[in-house]
Length: 564
Image (tube, rainbow, N blue to C red; front, side):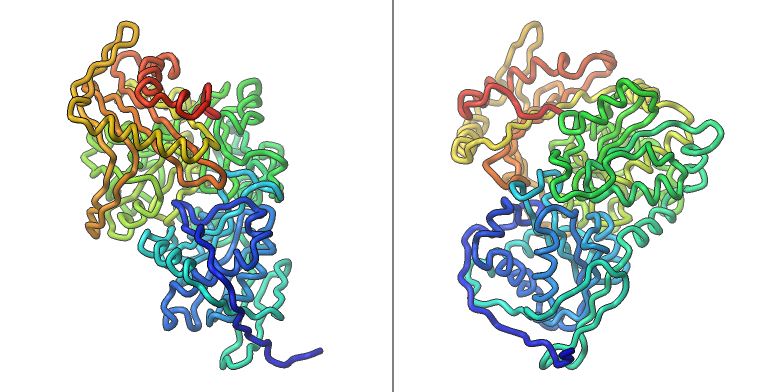
C-alpha cells in the first residue's frame, strides 16, 4: 500500500456568470452540476476563497446534506478541496446525511468556522430534480449577504481551484480518518459522526422529555402521525420520537431517506403532504406533522386534519412559551416574524410586552438578532419555526414545542387554537404560489406593479368586492434596517396595506431552481368572525390581488400551483 503523502493540485478553470447564491444558497437542476465542467468545483473553491487564509488554515468545517441525488458525489469533491485549501478537519454526518438544524447545532458545538449544507430544501430531488449548496457561517446560520456577495464575485473571476484528487473518504464508518498531504505539516482529519446524537442531546436540554414520554407512551397517551417525506428527518424521528419517547414505530412514515424522496415533492404543506392529510382526516390520530427534505420546515395538523397555519403556529408557541423548560431558564428576549407572515405573533408580543421584529424573508436576519441577544422565538409563513438554540429554522423542534404545549394544557390542537383566537382574534392567512412562471414575464409584472403602487394616487384608492370595501392606507416595497448593525435590505416584497389592517403582498421567491415563483400573501384580521373558512373569508382580497396585478393575464396562468 502506498503511504506517500497525497498530491495537491492546482487546476485551471473558467468562471460561470450564474453562481449567485439566493436566500438559501446556490440551487440548480442536477444536470447543471453534472454537465457543466467544474461547475461544482468553482463554487466550492469560491466558498473557501471567501474565507481569509489565516482563518481557514487548520480550521474545522461541518459537511452534510439531505441525502438527495448527487449528495455523495458532491461530498467527495468537497473533501478533496477542503484538504487542498488548508482546512484541518471536516466533520461529516454518517453516510453524508445530516439535517440542516443538526448541522447548525454541530457547527456551534465544535466551534467550526462554518458548514457546507447540500440541500435544495423542499424542492424535488432525483436525477431530474434540484441540487443545492449553502454555506453557513460560524454562528451556525446562513451566510449574510456580504459573504454571499463575496462568494459570487469570486465565482465570476475564478481562474483555478485547489484539489487533492487522490483523497478518498469512507462515509459509512463512524470515527476519524487521517490523511497526509504533501507540503502539509499536520495531517488532514475527517471525522464521520452520528448524525442524530449531538442534536438529540441539544433537544434533551430544551424540552421535558419525561413529560413528552408520558404524553406519547403513557397510560393516556395521544396518537400521533409523523411524515418524514423520505427526507433527512426520518432517522431523527425514529431515534428521538420512537425509540426515546416511546411512539409506536408505525406512527412514523416515509422515514427512509431517499435520493428522489420516493418520487415525491418533500414540501410539508396541504398539497404535497396529501398522504398525511388524508390519514389525519380519516384516522384516529390526535396530532400530525410533516417535515421537508432537509428538516428545517414543518406542518402541524390536529385531529381530523385540522390545519394550523405557520403564522398561527408561531403565535401559539409564543403564547405558551413557558411550557418549554428552556425558556423558563433563559427568559424571552424577543419575538420575530418575516414580513409576509401574518401579524398573529404581533398580538401576542403586544399583550406580553415583548419586543417584536418584522424582518425580510431569510433566517439570516433572525440569526443576527439572536446573536445580539434580542430574539428567542421566530417564524416564517413558509412553514419555518425556530428558537435561539441554533441559527436555523427547526422542524423537529417545532413539533416538540407543540407536543410540550399539549402535554401541559391537556387539550387538543384544535381547542388550543380556538382558545387562542378567542383571546386574540384571528388572522386569516393564505398564500398562493405560481411556480415555474416565465422569469421575464414575472419580473415585468412586478416592475409594473411597483410603478402602480408607488403612484401617490394609489393610496386612498378604494376597492369594492361584493359588500366589502377596502381602502389603501399604505403601499410600498418593503425595506428593512437591521437594528443590530444598521444594514439596509431593500426590495423585499410589494406591500398593500388597507385601512382595516388587511394586507396583500407580492414576492418573487428566491428558492427555486427553474423559472420564477410568484407568491401572493393575503392576511386579514377578524375579532368576531373567527371560526369561518379561510378561503371564503379571504376571497374578496384575493379578487383584489389578482385584479391589481393582472397576474393571470401577465403570466398565462389560470390559477396557483399551490394554495396554503
